[in-house]
Image (tube, rainbow, N blue to C red; front, side, top):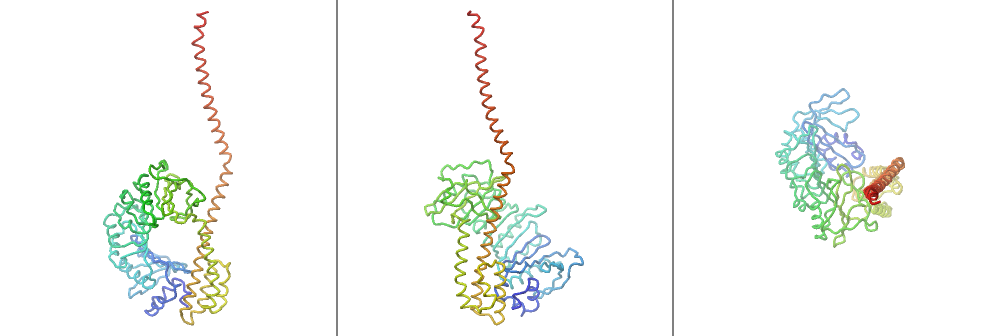
Length: 478
């Protein structure tokens, strides 16, 4: 089908041609589905970004009616859902559409409603402080819920006021992930129920709020939690076996604060019991957990608490080892799963395939994820004109699973290469600065010698003083 091969701007153009073409895009194969629809509310230029699975570039729609565009921009008048838009896009970037409508609120709601109609996925919402009249958008039912929300800082360093925060959190239900990076002097009750939460300013939370959290992961930057609070949290976790929801909590930490527990019984890291490292979730890389303190619950689940990243501000982590060897087991699991799928693949092709050349090429186990994905689309496109069928969709779904596993394996390999590169750089730095290490060790030895000499001199003067005081007395006696 032609729709399967369209780039994102062409897919949009087709969808707005007529009601029939809109319906065709809506009913197209799973490859045309968007991965996510993200909106970013920033005064005066709110935007919408649609990311796709597969080869398509993201489609962006930005409101910027105040700007004047050069001759390199192509100007177009579009009608979407009977609403007129004045747009422009650069000749080399047709997927980045600049909308010049003066009525931002009405135009934004119309185009967002259209996008969600043809790409029915959950929203991701980003908001900057001081959005002014854009607050009225939250009254629309489109904003009733979202999968992710991120409240960011603005370049002007504005802060969210209570009215803005009330308009956001009283109207929008966040389902999965909440990030509040900007300063927010507001009790954010949704932080207690989402799966993943990040709060740059959590000073409004107390110890009891920490116990109320029902998340899988949490990260706190500016907070008032003390080590006693985190120890109490660990004791509470120990007292509730068979509650596996919590995965990790991260706290920005003062590196000068000593980690010492009064009640919690812990052990040192044992390489036979768990991995040395765990993956970061907010950026690429790993945490070294070799100096954290371990403790095990009655159901066998192990957790660790300790400082894993030191600097001007350190990170203290409460990490639950659902997988005790995540860096090793993940790669092994993926390879095993890929082998299982490749064994099933020939039978799937025999029962559900048609034997075309691209389909046969997919059985090559050495194909990269990109090449496999390209061959899969070509094989699908050869069969699609004959009509959709349950066999075809089942065949496509199976090969999508293989593609997903291949992508995960390549990501894990990239992480391993990154770690090895960092280790090589570290070794080189040690070799390069070996003379500095030697100088430091010499200075340390000299310092010890100086201390010993000082002690000898003090002893010498003590003896000398005794001899001097005794000498006149000896002469008088003589």
